[in-house]
Length: 350
Image 1 (spheres, rainbow, N blue to C red):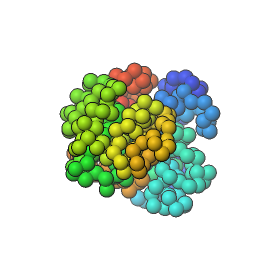
Image 2 (cartoon, helix red, strand yellow):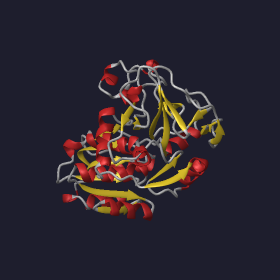
Image 3 (cartoon, helix red, strand yellow):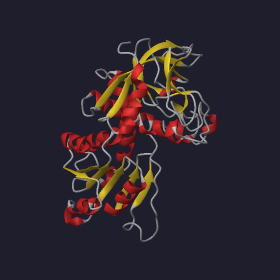
Image 4 (spheres, one colour):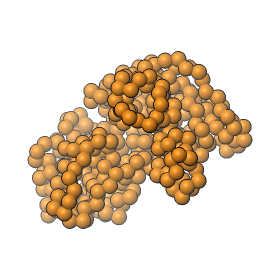
């Protein structure tokens, strides 16, 4: 079968022929119907000192159809549409027992320490994907196809998890700021819109992204500039600042903006993985602002996200590519040409 693989660190991934996987007892092979291309994959290609070995098939945002079942599995049927819960935990620690494999506390007991398919193990940028345990699969609700479900498993789930943890601060009088209206940010706007009544301010340096934000329901769309923090505060009641800031980029510049526009007692959540930092001390941010990072979301949250998608409340805006153009998807993503999420479609039917 064909697969898009990192063959060497600090190089582009290549489409190559590899053996088709077959499941051992308790495992599942899916026929991939959609695999999202994420900015974190670009960082992975350029990485050094990563604890995972190569070659590695990319694609940690996946959905498809059950193609082959390992012995002992009775909870799924052949041809059933499923989404992959990306973080693969140990299954037994206190976090994993609740479905929070994203925060597994025993990574050495997991199939891939600290990762999952596309992050240490072979992912879904291929015609078929091996999932090492049935617990990492979630059946798709009726009406949701794998191509549309794939972006919900990371861009949707990560944004949902970040917003959900701040729900108590997102009352109707609150203001939420989303920085970066790409794969994550365009989902965050929709999730804020459907789960809260907060005022939504979108920030990006691309006019096309700002127009997308307006289309999705942002109350205000601002260009990234030196005056952005001042403009954001001016747009909040009494100039008090944003109750919740979601940084879907994660550079030093966007983190600085997030810190400057936050309200006292607000939340600043780093969702993007660009690797930036911001100084933190008693006088560097408004009093009692909470800074946190998030990593993916839980399996129960993925069920909720997929339900929202099936009912039409979350609609990933996608640019699709066939598998033989998967490398181009990453080039377009790096160049800023992708609107919403880039999704590679290895197979269009089950």
